[in-house]
Image (tube, rainbow, N blue to C red; front, side):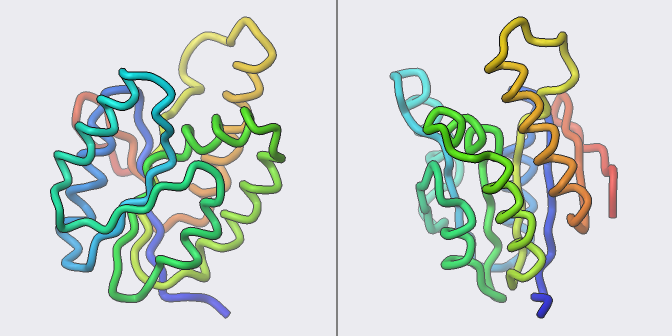
Length: 173
């Protein structure tokens, strides 16, 4: 059975404005807002980044933090009257790799789940395939996992955007 979801993928580089663009999209939806954070604060700099994101959103967002079980979280929080923002897929891939989890299996679970969710789901991710070929196995594996995941999500998404310098380019939808 297919849900009534609208799936949006927002890609961009570091500091491209992709998160702000996605947050504004959710704000404009008029739906109840849920923020699903995949990041983990392993150091002070990441903790500061998380604080900036929280402060920018304000108190009217429900926040769920889970670095691993993205499909499980989405299955619990998605609803017809909600807009769910996932930020971000590349941090989620990193977390899975660091825990030696099967990234392809988890990616397939997510890809299979998304079309069956109700409401709006906006997924943010960093495009990592535009630079040089990484010089080590783990970095290449990360790039490859991220690229495959982006292709999977883009193929089922209703809309796909690429954000650079704060400017969105609509690629699909």
